[in-house]
Image 1: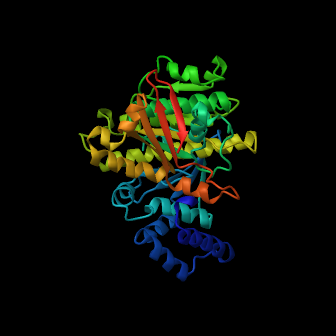
Image 2: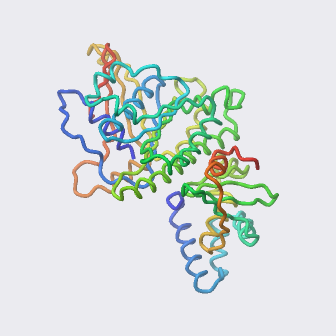
Image 3: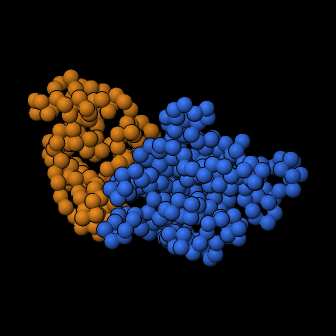
Length: 138
Length: 275
């Protein structure tokens, strides 16, 4: 996913990861930077991280994907190597208006990876295919 | 990177130009996706040529998705590909999903054969994205709606993510192996007359496909006078091209040439020329 982000965002995630490893916290200055780079969805993404909403799914084939539980309880499947989220905000703000880099769900995935807060879950290969192809029951 | 396409162009350069270079372009970045934009018929031929070249010259396994059945290999291909054998054709798996839903399902399922098949595919080809994304089955009523943009993004992201996963598998089998590439074609707005609809689709596709290969027909008098049936200009552009050019070491020219010419003679023979 990294290559899709501007350098400033990549550096920010690296800083968060490093500080979190040392202190188990994200200091205020990095939170402010996060808000500055990602706007209002930064706070919503931090909420999702607090609620342990991000799960890394793996199947026997080795394929991985992220699943994020949205505020309304809906499940969103996001890819490991590039940005896509089936949520309306991604379709509207990112794809249509080109106003944001990503939605709160993808940002939550980045933050969980940086802070080690990702839940782990195994699924079958068929379940993984259904989730990736968007045919799994929500 | 567009290395497969570049190999196709190099392999089928006109005889006067010689067939000297038969090597794949040097180091490729981790994501390798190319979008061929242009007339449906020509794009399809270029994609078939790419699939056949990858299978026969490089021994790659190829998955080819298209809505239209391929009854037989075009004659011009049979004549031009020197090492074409039934064995190498077996390396290409043709698949005919009818709707974007079926296509998503089939691409999403590619990882399932990872444990059963000895080598994963190294090239995923999708012919005619517009048929899946803007066609009557895509759910829209003429225009290209946010839902369809999201669908285009879903399909592109799934293709890129699948290629990234298959690259990992290929590297596990052999650490030096080249990454898995994606080549897809999309008919340009000019031909369809629905500029706004296809443009917003292209905007989304450009986010995910790092290289764009534009096919542009040359309608000039010279082309007609040369006794050729058709002349097409081929332009390679996009962030992937810029990266390939900047990673070159001490070579005089960029790793990927940005412009080629495609000459199609009356008997359907395709030849490429470096511009």
